[in-house]
Image 1 (cartoon, rainbow over the protein chains, first blue to last red):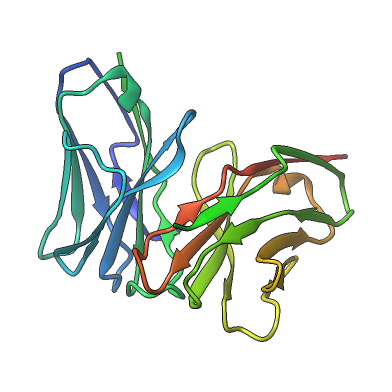
Image 2: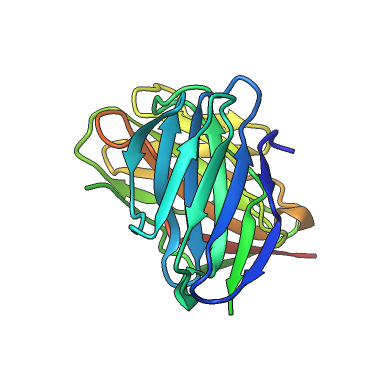
Amino acid sequence: DSGVTQTPKHLITATGQRVTLRCSPRSGDLSVYWYQQSLDQGLQFLIQYYNGEERAKGNILERFSAQQFPDLHSELNLSSLELGDSALYFCASSVGSNSYNEQFFGPGTRLTVL
Amino acid sequence: AQKITQTQPGMFVQEKEAVTLDCTYDTSDPSYGLFWYKQPSSGEMIFLIYQGSYDQQNATEGRYSLNFQKARKSANLVISASQLGDSAMYFCAMREVGGRRALTFGSGTRLQVQP
């Protein structure tokens, strides 16, 4: 158990809908990262927050947004869902944002868009 | 731009033998970190080992060691005394200090340990 929690574990929804994925980092970790793992794109970085502020953006679509709250949990919002958004979404946390800080991953949320 | 290459889509190894999973990387940043993660069929990503670009010695964590050859830009994972539970996908990843600090992952290697 990495100490990072993600809910829900599974999510099935329809095209055009909006969903929210939630992540609680390990106790004491200030950085939260979101990644998407799909069969065709592999593991891709979406966005990073550090202590409530957006720190870096990766290949995140405009239909997607995220935020980190004062209690450091984070939410990833996916809207106008398409079939291609079906993927495993990971949240990871680290104590800081330096290159030597290993990231600990949550169990993931498997999103299926029908 | 950084890039991680894992050239072995799949590998087989006999139980109790050692296996090396290859990883090469490309970066212009002199300061970076290299990571290996294991993803079993259940889906979670498990951190295995870390190597910093300025570390003089190869990292080791139990049965895992990282064969770091900086001039060749390679960071191969060595698993000694393979166990059936080692069957999983293995991902090599890198973070740069100067740029975006998220992980960039390779395409992974599926390791199957045979009894």
